[in-house]
Image 1 (tube, rainbow, N blue to C red):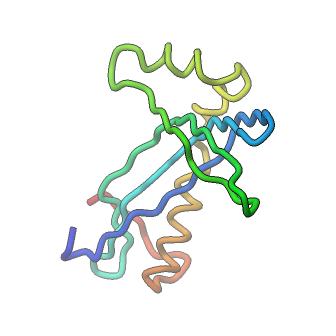
Image 2: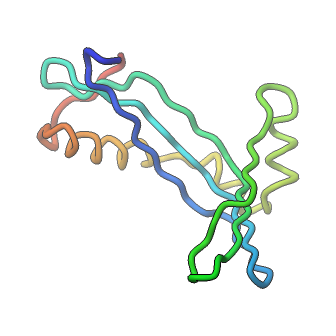
Amino acid sequence: MPALRARWFCRAEALDLQEHGDLVRAGVDTLCLEYGVRDGALVECGGAHVPQVVRLERDTDGGYRVVTQEEPPDGAGYAEWEKNHFSFLAESRLDDAAGRPAVLQTAARAYFGLPVGAPAEAC
């Protein structure tokens, strides 16, 4: 949305971590929301909440690089994919999105120079 100067804001939270030598498997909950500004208000124009499984490999200087990344299929099979790729505890936390948009709204307000109490509305 060029007229709104829209930009994506994302948050990723690792829910499952398993380390095997130089390999790490991370079950990650990812939330991305697109915000812009109109008439002094924060405007939410789109978003996606997607669980992912990311496999990382330690490189020679101690950092990590992504080896693979998986997401559930759209529609049929989504719930089954979550069940097969996340532990019971992590899977239950995938549906607990309370407060997550507020964190992204705070970051978006700061980015756009809006006051803390600036209203947020739909695109």
